[in-house]
Each structure stands twice: as C-alpha cells, then as structure tokens.
Image (cartoon, rainbow, N blue to C red; front, side):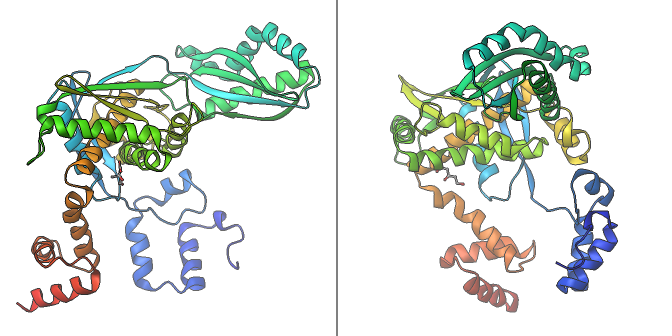
Length: 419
Ligand code: MEV
C-alpha cells in the first residue's frame, strides 16, 4: 500500500492527506473525520496510526441499588434496547432489596510457561523451595505497588504435560487493572527461573481467566412484581426459572443468554475505561469451567420470590490505563461515585444480572421484538435522514403502518414532509 510506510511517524494532518489522495475521500469525508476528532494528540498517545475517534452513544442506566446504595450507571453501547433493558431489570430488582454483591479475593493472575522440561518433579520441588525468593523478585520488579500495600501474594505450579509447566503468579494490584504491572513481574520472575534453574521459557503473560477476582451478585424479587397483563407474577417467575435451566442445558441458548449479560457488562466496562475484551474472554471461559459451556446466571423460584445469582471474574481497575487520560471516562467515574475498583466490579456484575433479568422477562412474556421495535424504528428513522423533530412522528406512522424497511420508511418520510 503506497503512502503507508512509517504512517505512524506522520503528523495527523499528513495522515489525513494520504487518505484523501489514496482513497479519494472528499471534503465532506475529511470534515467528518476532523469533526469527530476531539484531541489528535491524545489519540496519538493512546494508539498507533491514529486518524479519528469512533462514536458510540453513551447513556445512563438507573435504578441500580447495590449493597444498599443507589448508583447512576454510565453505559456505552450502540444497541438500541440495552440501556432501557438494564434500567428495567434493575427496577424489578428494586422491588426486592436490590443487588447484594460480594468479592472474596481481588488478585490478578499471570503465567510463566516453562517448556522442554526433562525433570518435572524436581523442577516443581525447586520452584516450591524458591517460592519466597521468586515472590521477592516479582516485588522488586514493581516496588511502587508494594509501597501502596499490594504486591505478589502467591505462586503455584501446574503441570500441563510431561514437558510443560505453568508457574502461576497471583498479584494484588490494588486499584489498577494491573496488566502492565503483572507482565513486568512475570518477565522478571521468568528470567530468574531461566538463569538460576536453567529452564527454557516459552512465554510470560497474565491470564484473563481471572479466577482470583470473582464477584458474586444475588437478588431476591417478590414474584408479584413480575406480573404482566394476563401473566401472573408467579407464572412469569416460573418461566424465568425455566429459561435459566435451559441456559444450563443447551450451549446454543447459553451463548445468547450470556451475550445478553455481556451487553450490560461491556457497556459499563467501556464507559469506565476498562478492557472489555478481557472481561468477555474471562466470562466465557468461566461459563465453561466444568467442561460444558453454561449460562452464567441462575434464577430459581423460592416461595413467593424469584432468586437470582451470578458469579463472574471481574478484574476491573479504577485507576491507570485510559482511566486517567480520557476525559469522558473521568466524568463517568464521577457520575458513578465509586470509591474503588471493588465497588466498580460489584456494580458491573449487578448490571449483567439486571440486563439478564430484563431479557429473560421479555423473552418469556411479550417476546423480545415488542420492546425492541420502537427503538429500532427510531434508529431506522434516524438512518434515513429524519430530523430530531420528525423522528417521533415518523416512528408513530411506521408503527401504525407496520413498516420496518428503509425504502418504505423513506417514502413515508417524504409524504410526511409534503403534508
Ligand atoms: C440481545 O442483544 C440480547 C438477548 O438476545 C439476550 C437473551 O436472549 O437473553 C435478548
């Protein structure tokens, strides 16, 4: 591709000029790219070959009561029904006592993989004997975290094959996401193992299967809060229980069930400046922890209540990474009024459970399309060029006429404009 050699060394304006010349972007395209770019210097410090910022809407989920405290939850998502559903799920939960969340440990895990091992038993013993020294090496690689009360906590060996050993390191990263910190420590410990134990290192990297950062959220909702039209609250609750059972049994359904949970989790993770790909990977891996991929949440009817529970790895940070540099992320932290990463993790898992409840409730009562339709028609209206004042009127007409496609919608918009 011509013009792209050392693209990263070019100024932002030069990069755009190359795009204009090579891809025939017109003035309108360039104006749009520039309009979307709030801070090219910031963009350049965050990623390579920066050209602009991609817009995804941000909104607020309401009704979230977690451990007795009510939160406003910023969510970033392009999917029309997600925030409304998150708020609806939380409204149902509020009819009970809100979400009860708990974190047992908050440690990040990383792996040092040793390959070509010939004397496995001996090596495992040596690592066990050197444990304290290796933890010390890890801490020396990042003394500032030790000063802040964190640091390497434990180390274990797992034999993966006759010739392959994983040395797992658990680190208290305090308020950070801790990826860089952990990777630095792992590489230092790996060098020490290589030098003193004369072993071959294959790789050193954190694990996104964050089993030492689990958050459990529970809720109990009076079934009467779930009645809808002809369906009694008890019937709706029983159907939600059945939907939950289905997600334990069938991988096809479990995947969609969990996708709904991640709709909420990713949206808050993005808004709070956290690595949502890491959370996705960890959640799906956790969903398959017994060798069978299952729904992450469980719902059961107990007397006159519907009881929900979900446990998930939630290794989020409240400082560092993009959190300290992206202005909107800083504002989002202020809106949530969280004191620390633990509180954030508990809110995020609560949103996942709230989102799941709203999806299951809709699926087993009205079906998902009814609630979605209005929002989808709004998107359709916007996509065919309806102005903000035209949108509500157009949506009403599309609803009345049962129109769902852009060609017919355009025609109706034209008629509406002629009127
Ligand atoms: C859509 O984005 C999410 C749902 O499919 C989740 C579910 O089926 O549980 C509605």
